[in-house]
Image 1 (tube, rainbow, N blue to C red):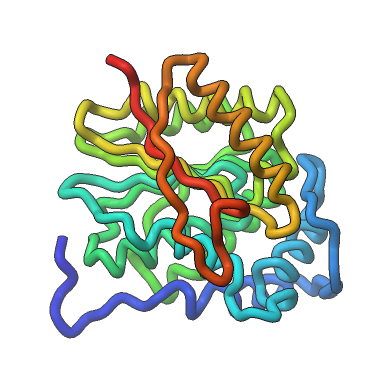
Image 2: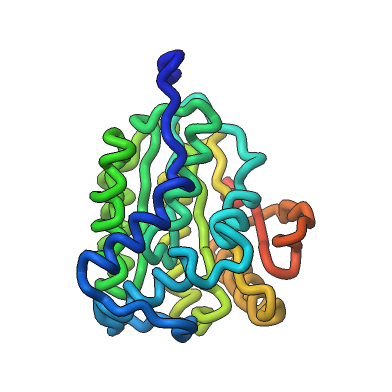
Length: 264
């Protein structure tokens, strides 16, 4: 669908931070400075809200919208297909990569009825936050797509299968995930999700894999990225490296991209 002339869709970049701060304040949660980077599977509601408010809500940003802009740079040169576009965000947190993806869709003049959003996060409280943020963002974007999310890999794979539609291209993202989660079990879980996507992908459709992580953890990101690609090769999912254009906030040491394909 082409958006009607004279009715531009708002940019989520303008609203996600006020909404996150509103959630914290409406729930009477005290803001904290410099919480730890890691959110465990057992982190509770207050902790995940404090963490997200600091790292995504703007409090930690000496550079405005730092994470949002890093994620946006990694997909801004993607071109929408004539079919559907799906985001599968591994380690989705409160939904930052989905907000970036929806703004990309707007720039591509792509109607939201052609967008599918999926998220995996090991922390149920974080998914609660993601769903509440989406609910509040509906006041600005009434056609905001459903966010199909789970803390369970099997459940997410089922959601992918149940909701898959023909002619869908996929973008799989890992935003600030691989540095803190690249154990054998983590990589196995990520591989299962990606394998499910590739089994659904039709011939001629594309699947992009994108990872963005901390500037100070380049070696850990490289280790996690190589482990993931190695695991994918072992299950017959192959890849082509896609160069990361260096900017002030991204380069090949702190962000990775690949195109995935099956040997048929």
